[in-house]
Image (cartoon, rainbow, N blue to C red; front, side, top):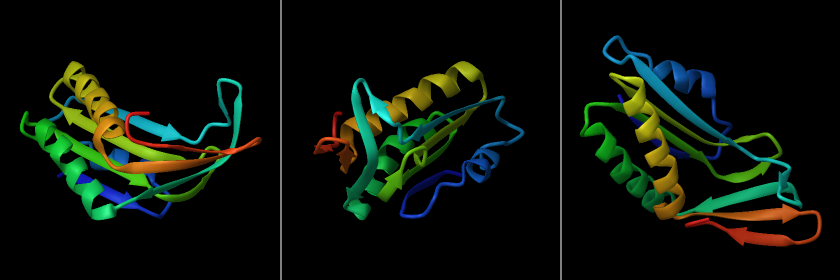
Length: 136
């Protein structure tokens, strides 16, 4: 059971983690990306994520399909809208027969999501507004 989703609602990490537990998988790796206060010396107050949902979910599914084809399970959820400090922006989980596969493929998914999925962020910092997104 895979789940690929863009949502404007808070991400329930407990529920998503439980969905990855299956008797056939011995390893589950999870990446949770939160809104942080500092990026080096830049102080962030909040972030607003935007996307073209249909296209973003299609690109996320393409990435997930590469992992699903190896016999693993995948959950990828990214939040859009205005997020405050410590809010969960992204959840990626991979369930695999062994831990090494779970680690490797979870990292692949988050790295590729940031590189290829059209999600943009508007960072409200103490001194200015910055835009970021693909490849950042």
